[in-house]
Length: 83
Image (cartoon, rainbow, N blue to C red; front, side):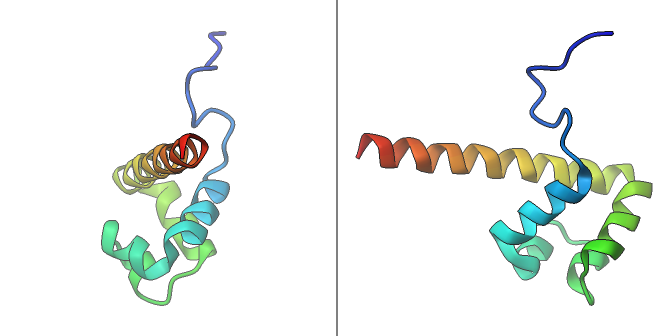
């Protein structure tokens, strides 16, 4: 079995990804970045997870946004350390 130590998504649950995105962006901003009903109309973690688990293209967008969020956080940290 191949190890995935370089994969930042390895071992991260979809629910955790979604909760972190909502905490970072909020539902409104998240819905404008990824225009899917479960983010824009009566959003909830439960309904979003149900949709994302059965919709690969939407899950991929969420995972890509999560990776972008991690990069943005790392950049901000680096700027604060240097500044």
